[in-house]
Image 1 (spheres, helix red, strand yellow):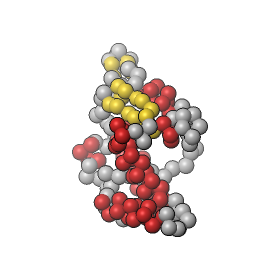
Image 2 (cartoon, helix red, strand yellow; image 1 turned 30 degrees about the vertical axis):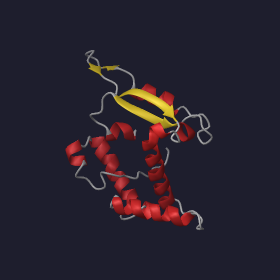
Image 3 (cartoon, helix red, strand yellow; image 1 turned 30 degrees about the horizontal axis):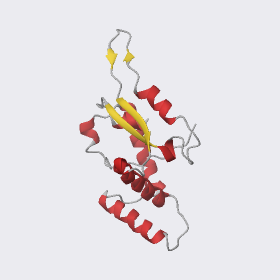
Image 4 (cartoon, one colour; image 1 turned 135 degrees about the vertical axis):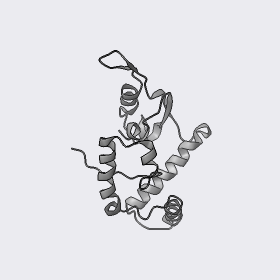
Length: 156
């Protein structure tokens, strides 16, 4: 999972999941995201010598991103919307002018040359190799697009 890959030293973390898209909202159709995340990241793990590996996340909760308390999730919604707007070619129209401007501004701020699959597909293979080989955080922050990464993959 990307959380595991991107948070090698994380302990006692907190994860808020948007109720609308990841939990029991209209789009998620009641998937098991919260349950899977708790199983994967909140269990204490013992190795064969009974050494303890502490869980990465101490708290996992579904929340509404519309609630002002979770304003950072609204930023995540904008980033995700810009990404999808750049990847999925939607019909152009008066409502898309603002979305396209926001997407272009995000690309500029994050120094992204493209949101096209042809650009990111080779990098996806690089990221997978980094994950398999256990890239160190010091190397990661010098890597290509360490602030923002798109992964393209097909389910097996």
